[in-house]
Amino acid sequence: MFTRRTAITLLPAGVMAGSHFTFANFALAQTAVDSIKPDPNAAARILKELEAYQNGPSAPYYDAAAPMIRFFARVAGRGDLSKASKSDLREMLSDLKNINDISNVDHVLTMAKKSEAQLGRGLLSLDDKNRLMNEINGQNDKLQQILDKYFGASGTLDSNPISKSDRDTLKQLADEVLKRGCKLATWGRDAFYAAARGYCAYQFVSGVVKDSIAPPATARAYVLGIMADSHNYFALLSYSASPPTPTQPAPAPSTSSAPSTDPLYEYEKQMTNRFPREIYFGSEYGNKDTNKCSFDQFANYYGKIDGNFDQGFRIAEPGGWTQDCGELNNKSVGALSGQLSDRFRDFAPRSGNSENLRVVFDRVIEALNGRVARIKRQKQERDKASGTTSSAATSVQNLPDSDKNDLLPEFKALERMAWGLREMLSKA
Image 1 (cartoon, rainbow, N blue to C red):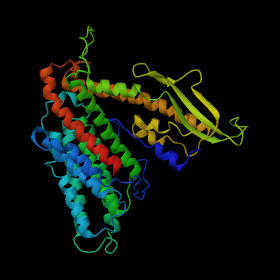
Image 2: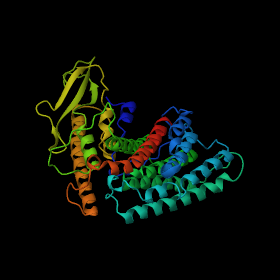
Image 3: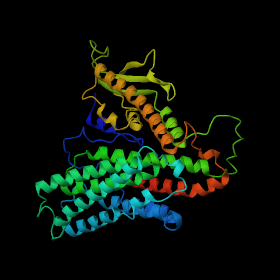
Image 4: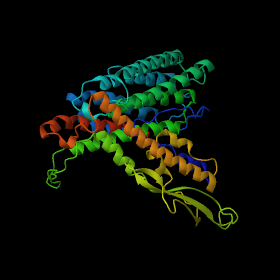
């Protein structure tokens, strides 16, 4: 039996860069409701952790992330901003304009980086990246111009409400900025800033108009997933580039003749192979005629998966689709959403029974294999763009120590900024 609470757990908690972002299936507007109890001290603690990156080569990374962390903290827990004073709203809009300044996020996306080969370029062409940046900047300008009209007087928006036409335009602009920001984040692992910037505009407008096209919980989960994935990736690269410590002996020289590999491809391959192999899908009330469970029990349905990234995934045989009779079981429901892209948010049926839950399981297998195909296709596109063959990209582990020393500061700075945005989004 699926409840509203169960359905929320099925939202995408970690979405790999490269998934196709669309809110087409959420055409019905929903009231912006903040489902997380904000931590008022989170921003101060996070910025304290990041202050070492304020100066030197890492300063641009900090200058782009810090204003967004402060903005998330300021808007946190304020799902209805229509009752805020207009002076307060003007200050928030000023903060948003600072975030959208081209010297912040756009600078990070265009600056030359020593670690360029490790950032996963190739999914977006340079022309597409520049087009998206221009579109986002233009839409942000329109959004800010509309809001400026209403924030100039005193009082609150309740006393001088936004017109229906402007409300609809603001909702559409916020949705477009968020979608394009998430698409721009596929430029590379360092482009997570674009998704965070889009979410700032979305979050503010949703609070001002008390409405949104994309469901707030879905938008937060999608952007949080991008932050988490980039954070994990740069943490892995930082570890690979770091010199061994006394408790971490240097690995023995490899005698394998295998070619060096694309680190982004290897990372996504490892993450896909960690997908859970036994998953609880849902339950229904006991019925001896349909599910062989007594009326005082629940029929719990499970799917089991065989296979891996290289061989493909399939329903385990025998026993790939099973059930038991007992208490309601919600364990592992959320595990489904980690790697299947935004497609999974349509998988949950309206009610649970053996027939429609099995359909969900079939679609999970389909989406998992679709993810594998997409990762392989993206790698081919990167290889083609760089003029390399299948596995010619140099892995961090195989680089000389001198090159690792050059790359490590960038890896660490990007890892810390992705961590900071991820941490703030999870607490704001």
